[in-house]
Length: 79
Ligand SMILES: [Zn+2]
Ligand SMILES: [Zn+2]
Image (cartoon, rainbow, N blue to C red; front, side):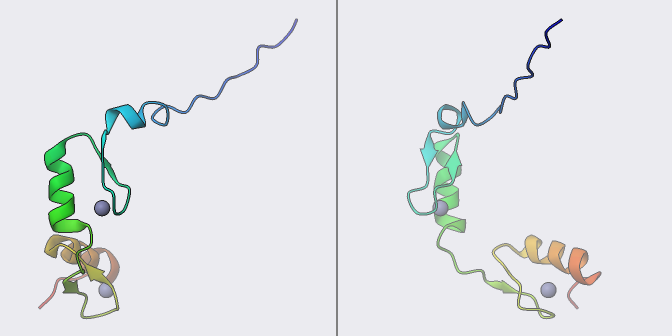
């Protein structure tokens, strides 16, 4: 009795191009909606991370990212 070969599919890879047609020309990040890409271009891409961790060289682009980093990495909040 022959065994049927298992086929491994990779969901996401096949339709990634069509589901996220808006691609950032700078970093290649893809978005489904134009406003998302616009926000990324304005606030994320090419922006220097402004929020520096006082305890290590880590830098965050958003304040809540830094707060999360402080909690996750250093177990506390900034004074
Ligand atoms: Zn980008
Ligand atoms: Zn840190």
